[in-house]
Length: 190
Ligand code: VGL
Image (cartoon, rainbow, N blue to C red; front, side):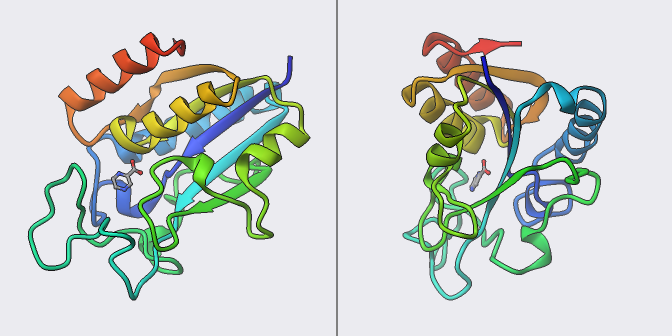
C-alpha cells in the first residue's frame, strides 16, 4: 500500500475574511498542520492543491461578473493567481508538502485532478508515478472541491478516505449531502 494525503485548497480566500470565506476554514488549516506534525511521516506523498484562476477572465463562467453569484455554480472573484487570496492560509504549515498542484486557470476546476504541477505534470500522473493506491482527502470546501477531488480519486481507482475532522464546507446541508454521496461512491469517512 502506498498512501498519499491530498490537501485541497486551504487558501486565504476560502477562509474567514477571504473572498469566499468558509466558516471553520482557518480551524481546518490549523488542524491539518497538527495532522502533518503528528502523522505526516505516515504518508508516502503529500500533495496540496490551490485554486489559481485567471485575473482577466470569468474563468469559464465560474466568476459572477454581470450578476450576483449564486454560490452554487457562480462565485465572487476568488483565488486569482498571484494574489494574497490565492496563497495558502498562513496556519497551514506547508513544509512537508511534496507536490504543489495548481488548477482553475480559465476554468472552474473543482477537482484537484484537473490540476497540474508547475512543470505541467497532471496530478494523476504524479500519483501513478509514486504508485499511490490509497489517498486521504482533507481541505476546503467539503461540498465543492473536496467532493469533486475525492470522486475523481475514486474514479481513478484509488482507495479513498475523507478525514472528516479536517474538512470545512460552504453550507452545512450540501456538505452533508456531499459526504453521503462520497460514502455511497465507496469512500470511507474517517
Ligand atoms: C471552491 C467554490 C468555488 C472550493 C472553489 O475550493 O471548494 N468552492 N471555487
